[in-house]
Image (cartoon, rainbow, N blue to C red; front, side, top):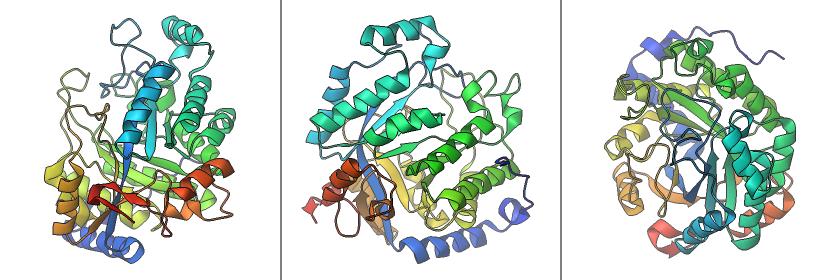
Length: 380
């Protein structure tokens, strides 16, 4: 199967009237999702900040020689999980660099000291630990995965994710942000999307815009995601993430995409993607809340009351009551969801390991959203 698509000619997305585009996107959103916008209350565990990739826009990754490089211990993982549990979190989001042990001896030795030969094996054990010791649902952002790695993680995670980011192979050339990043070759990431679908894993993916891709390449990436979902039905949400400059990255002077560019991409995504795929944009840019809602999103993603956004640490998470007020101002009701969307909790769907499904179902209302609505101070 050729999972890299030919570029579609959809000039309406790039050059059409933005207001008309956003109105069309809102109509699709309202027809399927109504006037409810959701978020997931989470604790964020950066299991390791070492990675074999060196993306030009990343501030999360540290070279193994850096004093800041680390792999979290089981005790540290559990401490964060319990903090999240005390604050009403339902999701524990594991984020980590991709396979640093394959490139760096120091990363390999650090894993060996913990008793593991691969980061994926250690991640699976940490998910199992969280399931044993807390009431949280693990969500795993582990990057590209083999079929065997998905098999290892599926029984101990409620959902998984990996940003596709782009299908532009140009960006892997020398001088571009994905140069010498083996896990950012588009075909490798598309293969992970396919494998997750074949294994029936509720999956999160998305685009990173403004790193040098063309608008046409964004459209191509959206069609690739939608094609995988059409084959397998597993893409539960798509994130439209904007590149943000940071002082300690190779792209520190690269321009950020303007708001209009973000709105056009969000609206195009809502029009192209299947209506049952949730559409998300970053919540920690409060000045853009109303604009993003106008462009067709229905979800704010994970928000943590206990940990920072380790990927974009310069932007604090919004205060959830404040976010609820913004949504009310726009005519929406903010509701808390689980890391797994309601449609995947249906009996017989086959998308979640039975033991995790039992836990998730016990945390959900009849409509599949979180039973305990923390941000509103109520129990539904």
